[in-house]
Length: 358
Image (cartoon, rainbow, N blue to C red; front, side, top):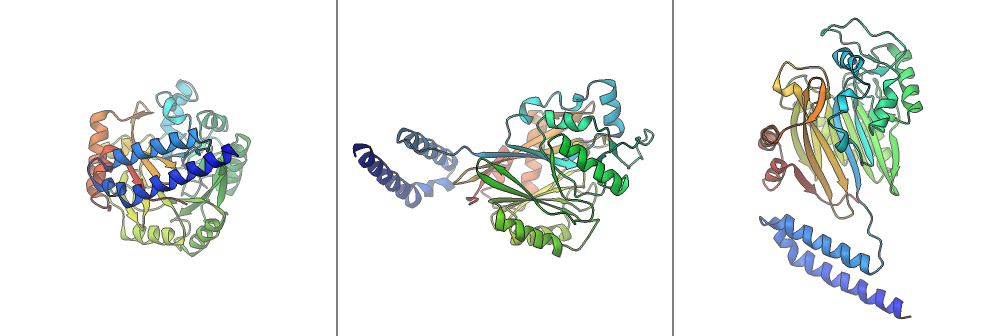
């Protein structure tokens, strides 16, 4: 009986503190030190909840990257070194995530690769590299892109089989025909839908797919392949489609194909990353193509946090950008993004927060 009374009193205290927060302390959130105040409040509440025997759920972490290539000059360096050579300097950040995904620019097939040439744009990956991806933490890939069928439907089906054998889930396809994927993490369902603009420019089917997975999932990620290559700003068409996807139920939209980072927009409280740029790719002809953007999404009950992680290709390996380069990339991203003024300095700092996700 004493324990029951204690829990009732504790819950009453939580409600009182929460009321004070929402009607008083929350006003401070918009101040310069608001994020710190909110963080201190959350930490205090978590500690109090633990002492009262209430389980505080761990956040779900999803780390997403842009275009990933395992052919051409990346393959040459892998053959010269070790299978996971491209990720040797990124091990720490790739580990410990609930989900790790990227856009797979090619297929795992039994076909022989084309002769080494920078103008070769038909990509096949050695099936032996699929387990290597899994060992480095990748468990989901987007296949809704223009390279998914470089070796035809046969190559695409081989790739699906090799991915499945390695324990890597996939979603999307060249023609936008496949169903959405749902992954269950920590008791929550995370939905993934792909969209490839050049396989089917019409978006009605994708919009319906998003609506359907929205009914089944707690959080919906739409991964797109769209836009114009090497353009630093998104097009009107990208924006119109992205907003339709959000209206249909997407919680976040991730973009690929331009091979450079494009700005962020927050539309109806939902972030749109128009292009994450290159993650692992052998293009080295400009600063923009040598750098990409990783996005770590942390899903908490009362907020969704986004950590922005600039990356850099050196010697055909992925590296974290140094502090000077990181500041340069994030400052430019902040300046060009369509977000409220309060979010811009957060983007420059590499972390921003949006409203509750469920």
